[in-house]
Length: 488
Image (cartoon, rainbow, N blue to C red; front, side, top):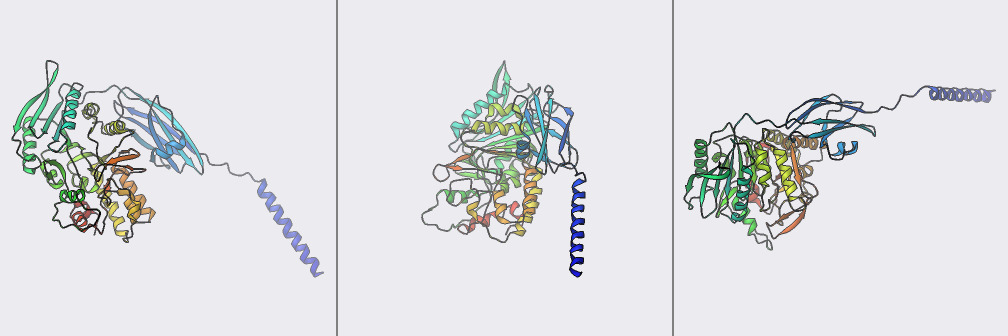
């Protein structure tokens, strides 16, 4: 009897379980959540398109802007290489640095739980309008250092580009060629672009003497009045690295590693003969104006330590992480862009990359005001670092056996395993760099000409401590960047 009761209870339990399962199966299941995205036009002018992006049922959202004639990217492509935005709320967004009177396609994409969706919006920029603000471009060329032939060509390209500028455009050129040193201003005379001599200088003067440079810029202020100014600096460059230390790497006996014995000054840009200007001196020397942009046609100037010193000098900075080939920038293309109301900085960087496609080129557009936020994020990474770094996993940007310039983001990845800190840093980096570009390889002549692979590049370089060169690290610790991030 007892066994029968147990069997009956078991049967009852099984019956209830089966009934419950059957009941669950009969109940309607919730439909899978499908992500949706909507786009709506807001406004357009000659260089920008503004629109709203509204995601629904999404965990990720991103967008891209492509010219009307190009293939439309898939949702996966937009999510992979587009600009990410909030997936939980509508965003009003602007595609900038576009061409006037041109059709573009805004493509938005969302995803959730393996499902994705995309939407397209066609918009057309308006005709270009003349800028109501007068703008002057200062081109400062220091070529008494082996760059004379390249600079002669670039000077001619700048003069040729002047034909495409509005009538009231102001271009001032300082050129130290070695056999002459002149300050001139371009002007039109009977349909011909010519140079008006402002001042001829003694060729024996050092054009990297900060007092001399300051004097030149004060004279420009007297001669050329404008509501805004831009600056191109063309010469040799070394970013944050002290000029003496850079030279010591050039002439170092790499076969028998010997320690340096130097008393370095911090940072350098520019070269006149064998003299160089240190970046803190450069900051003071050019301080006559605040610039809408400073463009470095010089090697290695995208070092975060050097650019940090310049964060109050300009709104935007353009520089290269590696060596810039002798051709420099495509001046015939970028000079007219720089006189647009938006200055066409992103497009200028794109033109640089187009020039060096298939050869060697790296370029970054930096929003100077965002560098303090980048330093704050870096300070947290530095504080979390336990000193364990595999330097071999960090990209170098020249051919020295022990590098002077390393990739900043890859350095951060070596400093901490904390993914939250990494993401906070990456977000600050993305804020500070509206555009970066690089070729898959680059050429370095620092220690014998080499072609070096560049599979990824964040757009900024940094110092990484090496025990073989304590003097280099000691010089780094003097920089404002090192102090801002709490380096030790």
